[in-house]
Image (cartoon, rainbow, N blue to C red; front, side):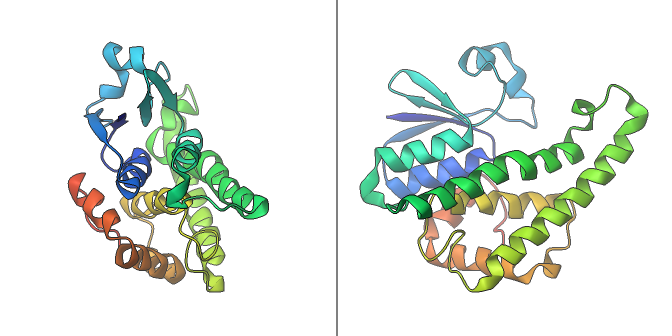
Length: 211
C-alpha cells in the first residue's frame, strides 16, 4: 500500500489523481502547506526537503513529482500511463521536467519572494516579474496544446496530464486571465470529461473544478 503525503491543490494532486487512476490501495496523509505543516519537525523526518508530495513505498519515501509520476507508471505498466516508444516517453519526461523546473519556479516567485532575495524591498518586484513569467509560460502551454492534440503530449493520456492540470489551477489562483488561453481551457474541459476520476479527486481535495 502507498502513502501519499499531500496538500490540497499542490502538485501532489497529480500523484493523487494517478493513484486513483491506477485503482491501487493507498492512504492519504494531509500536510497542509497553508498551515505550514510541511515545516513541522515530524514531517521533516519523513521528507527533510519540507515539500509535498512524498510517497511512502514499501517502507521507503520517494520525493519529487518528476520521480514519483514515472515510478507509478512503471510500477503499474498495464495502466498504460507512459508510452512504450522511447521518443514518446521522452516527450512525457520533457514536459514534466519543464513544469517542475522553470514553470514551478515562476509560481515560487509569486508566492515565495523571500526565497529570491534577502531584502524585503525586492519582494514586490520579484512577485511582479514572477507573474509576468507565469503568463509567458501559460502562453507556451497554450501554444503547445493548439495543434489539435488530445492530451498533453499527444493522443495518449499519460502521467503528464494530471501534472499539467495543476498549473491551470495555479494560474487561475494568481489571477492569470485564462480566457486568453483557449486551447488550455479546452484541454482542461476535455480532461474533466474524459477522465472522471480527476473531478472526483479535485472535489475530495476541496477544490473547484478547473474548467
